[in-house]
Image (cartoon, rainbow, N blue to C red; front, top):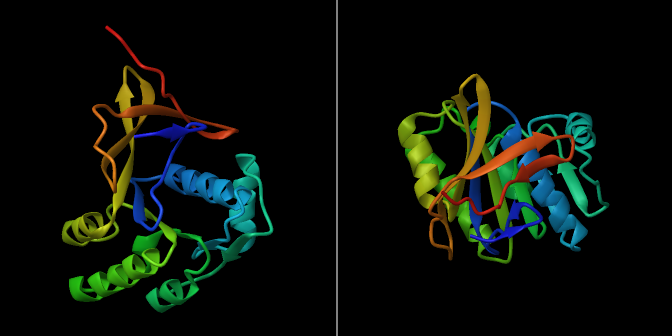
Length: 198
């Protein structure tokens, strides 16, 4: 697994899930990756149930640069909105589970397959997902069909919160041997890539 400026290098033409139990770390990370893609000249679409100003406020909080090639599709509420709005070279669907809380497995699979088909036409698609909104079966279906899964984990160790990235699956990569520690600062998500011995 390669890291670039503390960020995981994502595969092209793939659907990758960024999942977290609670919080906004996965969303912040998605914004960082999207801004990095826009900075490299890619057209980015960020589809969110939130308002554009709220997304921009979060970007400002973590000093994430905004580019003209970074389009925010605000107040999206339906699965039809995400499949038709997911355009450009790099697409983020924020809070994916909120678009299909009552979907049966067949409809969820249809939506995911449409996103996978779109990714094979030269597009990287990120799905941020808060776990626990959907049933375990729905979440497992999402993980199994996605090309990659990045899990943001928090562990309480001796009264301190330790944060880790776990990458159980990534297209074209062997799973890493260990979880990578990371921190959240005003600069965003910083992944510690130092090799530990002992």
